[in-house]
Image 1 (cartoon, rainbow, N blue to C red):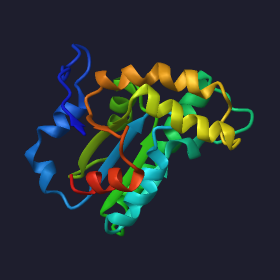
Image 2: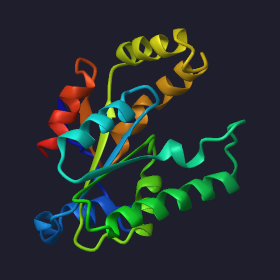
Image 3: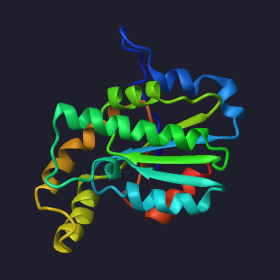
Length: 194
């Protein structure tokens, strides 16, 4: 279920935010936790995080997709900058708010620079950061996505795009949870115990 990431390394130009956060003992005694839950489209991030929100005390949830829910969907330099600013503004508000002990964020987050940029923009203080990637087999992913396509929730081209991203998550400095044989309630239960 849990997989170690053997590719934890710093790139010479930038500090690896995950490595710095993970190895800071002061952050592990913090009352507030930020859960970063990544994974390819259809792996179950949103459903898992909605359930996780109910399992953790004083929690709040943000899905990165909500921060650029537009029609037609346009991925440009401008919209990518906008979505990152929207996400960080909202997460920083959640992190500052004393009502929340657990801040849950999910988004595709398929490249380490996305995670590092996000963490650099946040005012973390003594917040503990738990970066997670939900991963699964190609067969399990295709099965999940076909259900969504058949129900009219996703376009058919999402299957190929999502499958292509599966290997990218093995390169990230995150805790990997293989969800191929797990339902979202089980996955949320595992995350809640971290």
